[in-house]
Length: 73
Image (cartoon, rainbow, N blue to C red; front, side, top):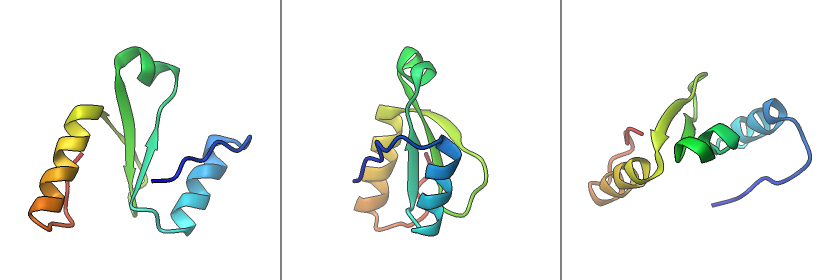
């Protein structure tokens, strides 16, 4: 896991992560903190999905256990 806390715009950070082929980009802003959720963007997709953190982590763990690369957030 890697955090990008640089003082850059979000769009720039997302482009950089895509160029590095990072499988999941997780965005947490003020709205997400308020809703206790995260926005997840999977590598190769142009849009993000909102998910509860616990749900996302559960799906990732299931994917790891089944050795599946098609984990849903």
